[in-house]
Length: 167
Ligand SMILES: [Fe+2]
Image 1 (tube, rainbow, N blue to C red):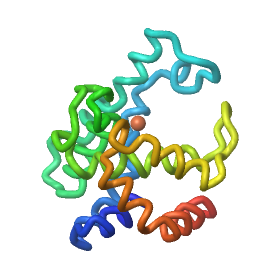
Image 2: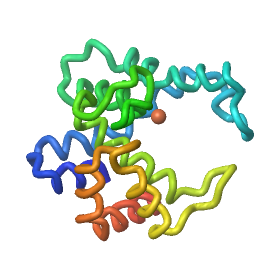
Image 3: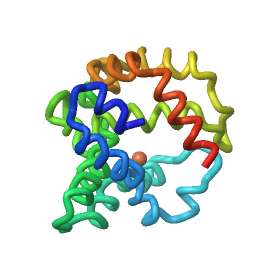
């Protein structure tokens, strides 16, 4: 999904291909989160939330200091994928184009996938509802250009998501 959005935004095919492989590592830092927080079914309290919110930095530590371009890309995505366009994200509260574009793309792809997935606390959303939610977050959570690219290749994204779900 991230790779297809990158192509739609006019990025070169090599970069999009790297992003296909880097994006699945975005939450790798969650392996450092204790199970009682990670697997808690209900709402997290303040302390648990701050532990959970350390996963971008934990992921970046794991992926740091590699000379591989793929792992460098994965590092950037892991560290910044919870930043939000309007500055309300974490860990740094970065805004707009301060956030690396690869992380802005993965932010949209991550939420798209999460909304379409069934979780212990929620059902899978229908595609139309998920798309409405993401559209409503353009300029807030998300880069409006990434949202626009998502909309213009939506049938492909739905197909990629469905295929990935089967596998
Ligand atoms: Fe995450």
